[in-house]
Image (cartoon, rainbow, N blue to C red):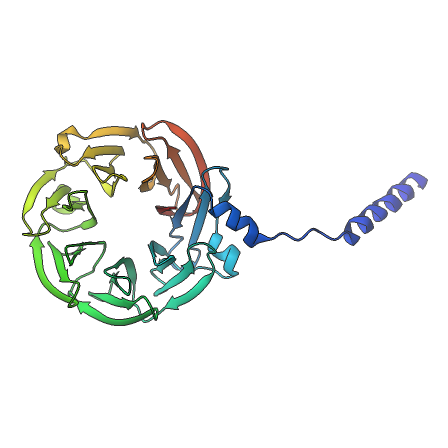
Length: 346
């Protein structure tokens, strides 16, 4: 009985001591600023549809520290429902939150919320055509939105009569993919006017341009009609298809990317493949072999050539990022948010 009383007495003293101690305040912004100034990568985590659990993760590549939800950490609010993409312009990050019908604008360095663009239906991707104007594609509006980058408002739209997806700007023209149409659409960026289209095939999502300003478009194909995936190389001046490469019937290519020198394409297809822009598809090299998981996104560091792969796992738990060097040798893995899908390198 005496032993029990003594133990309880000292336990109470211990609890009293710790309850009276003043914790040293943690300067979250200071810690964040130190972390973000280093080599780092942002991970776009879509989150689950209708669950409003989208997030933006920050990985410090020097210390391997991860802030799983940096937007919420620094703004004390949830990001929203399905983070589709992130675009960098004018020292800001534009967070395109698809199912929340908005774009959250944060400062590139502090990550503090500056403004919100509303009046959108289901925004997908953003592309600037000047320092004051940008376009935003949309899943349901069948148009491309025109955004004023000074007032952070929607000022108009360009009718395309199709679901619009990724875009590329070259020689005053914006090339827009439309997955449910057979065409790549062309917009005059000065007049905000649809002017032309290029016949390809359906399910074109990814688009980018190489160091020679040629446009590359990847169609994922359609197994329901036995249509294989295709990779197109297009001259942006005369719209001529310079090359088209057809994949095998069992291939499922996606996440078309390009390296920092803009001379080698990368894509996912049961692994990571590299294709120099002057080579044919038959000369593509498998850099990384992947098996038995849901690899959902790909990123190539423009500075180091390192390869980052987003693994969505079961689409419910937090996803994993796999980091490889430029030779395809595994370096590190990181836990991030739910359904990681893409990357922004700082």
